[in-house]
Length: 52
Image (cartoon, rainbow, N blue to C red; front, top):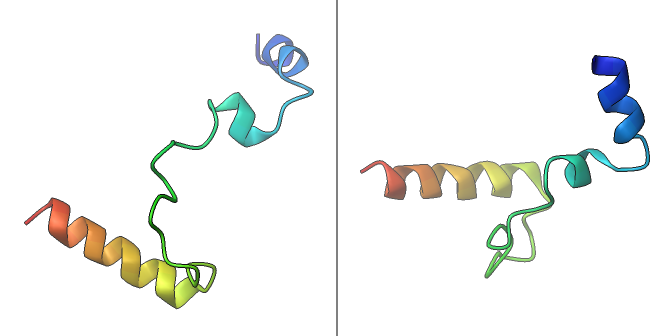
């Protein structure tokens, strides 16, 4: 079964197989999110705001 799934999905990237990027993922994101420390800070702020 796993082999069959891989042959059906062979031409796609991982992101494509999972349905693509969420539309809202990078909306209004700062341009410096490529740096790890900035990403960690942004994720922490998001989680704190969401779970407070």
